[in-house]
Every structure is written in structure tokens, then in C-alpha cells.
Image (cartoon, rainbow, N blue to C red; front, top):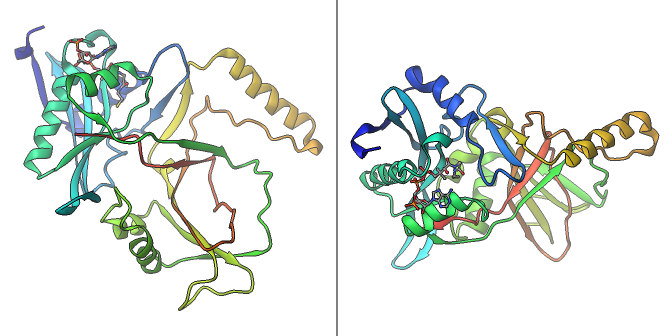
Length: 318
Ligand SMILES: CC(C)(COP(=O)(O)OP(=O)(O)OC[C@H]1O[C@@H](n2cnc3c(N)ncnc32)[C@H](O)[C@@H]1OP(=O)(O)O)[C@@H](O)C(=O)NCCC(=O)NCCS
């Protein structure tokens, strides 16, 4: 394929929506031999970024066939790189090339085009997150595009509908007003690397379910801080898109089904059933987990089908 045949242009919802959805459905992420997650964008391929202040989506077209897609968004974050301590970063996500057209530099060209858009918009660093065993993605970004590894993340998932853990009555909980939450973030977390300077907008977004604090019963949340306290915020990702497990080993499916059957047959045993991750499920994203003081306030805010705590780390920056 000559490069001349390939057109990379902005996504046009009217023209491309159905084709992009179809393309994404045909692209598994990560090695085929182990389970991978499909993203169901609920009919809106741009849903993952449309809450960002500035974003774009590019498609790669060959003749009248859509063969690749990439998304990007931008934000201002804290970065400890004197003399600047704020940087404009561009986040690359949703890179997909249809299997039949892989290894023809389409992915490479999509990233380069997106980087051009970043440069025009004054971005200092581009970053993306990928799994370590996604060889194609890792090699593309590290070997070919010279990205460097920045952090190693932990994504912690917890099905919460069958939560066995009881919250101790020694704690009181309070949902904060957005202004209060924003000032906590700015006071305690704004020096953390990659802190989002638009935290106020994130907290005000309709998908933000709120910020809660916990502190020892008997103390109060007011003009002074309790002797110890913890906070977290919750974002409802399930309103934007759903996830579904694909291609997991059949033993895994059988284990899930039998645990659900056990729960139905013997509800008195209160056996925690494994949720059916083969059906699309939404999740709440728990972020801004922070604690002050000696007392360990172990608690969890209200959750949907599952909670995902993401320590935003495995980022590749160049
Ligand atoms: C990752 C992906 C977008 C790469 O697209 P692509 O168009 O095939 O990639 P390119 O042809 O531009 O590859 C450029 C370079 O990346 C590396 N690369 C790409 N695919 C590779 C693979 N399967 N194995 C090893 N290296 C690979 C190679 O260095 C390649 O250069 P080379 O062909 O000269 O050796 C594609 O495999 C894909 O859609 N995967 C599924 C979705 C995904 O995992 N997305 C990334 C998560 S953000």
C-alpha cells in the first residue's frame, strides 16, 4: 500500500459513527490468547473524550473503507519540571487498526497526525496508557515513536453488589459541596504530579457523583479538620460506555456461572457470586483517594456494578 492511498481526517459523526462502532467491535485490544475487554460505546464512539475540554478523533480511510481510528484530548496538569510546574498534556487513546490492515504503518501515521494536532494546540507532552503485554502497542510507541515509560499503574477492580465488608460505625460520612471538594483537592493534592488543573470542572460534571469524607464519629467536619479523615470522589463511567470481557478461558466462564448458581440455590450461605463480566457492565471510577491523620478510615463510597480504582500511572510521555 502506498502512503498516498491513505487519508487521515477528522471524524464526522454523521458519516462515520456506525463504521467506527463496527471497526472498534472488530479490534480486540491486547494479545488474543488471553481475555480482553471490549468497550461498548453505547452508540457514541466519541463518548470517552467528549467530557474533556478539548478533544479530537481522527479516522484513517483507504478508498471508502475505514481502516483505523484514534482519539486525543488535552488538559493542563501539574508536572515537576522546573522552571514550569504546569504542562499542557495530550492524551492518546482508542487507537485501533482493523486486523487486515495492520503492519502497514497506519497506526504510526494516526499517532503522528494526532501529535500534529497536539503541537498546533500548544501541547508539551503526549501520553498514553497501555498494557505491558500489548506488544503491538508497546513496540509502536516505544520502539518506533520513542515514547518512554513514565509510570507502572495498578488497576484495581471490585464487584461491589455483593460486598461482605461492613463499614465500621466508628466513622461518620459526609458528602461535600463541589466548592469544598475542589478546595480539598487544591490544598492537599495539587502538588502531585499529573494533578488536573481543571479539577473544578471534573467535579462539576454531571457524571461526577460526588466527593465524600469519612472521619471519626464524635468529631465534626467544619472550620477545622478532624484528627484524621479520608476522602474519595466517584465518577460514573457507566453512563458513557460499558465494558465486556471477551475471549476469556471457558474455565473462567464456568466458574462464574457455577458461583452464580450456588448463590441462587443457597442464598442463606451468602456466598459472593462472581459478576457476569461477559455481559456489558458499567463501572464507577473511584479517584482522589486521600487520607490525613493516624486513624485508618477504611471505607468505600456507594458504587455501581463494579468499582475501578485507577492510580493514573502507566503513562508514556515523550
Ligand atoms: C496497536 C495497533 C494500533 C498497531 O497498528 P498498526 O497499523 O498495525 O501498526 P504499524 O503498522 O503502524 O506499526 C508500526 C510499528 O509498530 C510495531 N508493531 C505494530 N504491530 C506490532 C505487532 N503486532 N507486533 C510487534 N510489533 C508491532 C512495529 O515496530 C511496527 O513497525 P514494523 O512493521 O516496521 O516492524 C494495532 O495492532 C491494533 O489496532 N491493535 C488492537 C488495538 C490496540 O491494542 N490498540 C492500542 C491500545 S491504545
